[in-house]
Image (cartoon, rainbow, N blue to C red; front, side, top):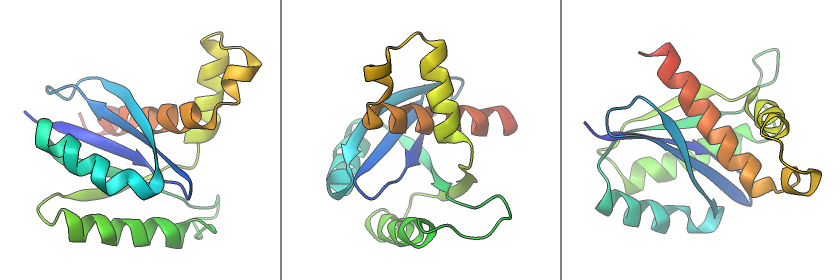
Length: 137
């Protein structure tokens, strides 16, 4: 089996997580500067088989779009152009950053470590992917 890749897309940084090849466990991969996302993915896909990308869709509590929704939709179109054979699924990301911050507290990370936004993005992508696996297994 191939991996599933999760993307927590942001204007400056993008958090990435992947499953193991059996698609049982989600693990944080890295955080990349958003302008470097496509080159990073090209290199990663050349080394690792990936069968699906899931991407966090920013929504407000009332299901309306957030200020970030158009940015994410534009990114999805770019990914579809660069990787036309790769399926992309949008998933709800409303709670992921808050859950990531809570997870960092529970892991015992110091306040300075919890302020590392790159780590928050990576953990948010991991939480999103783990939730996707839970719902779709």
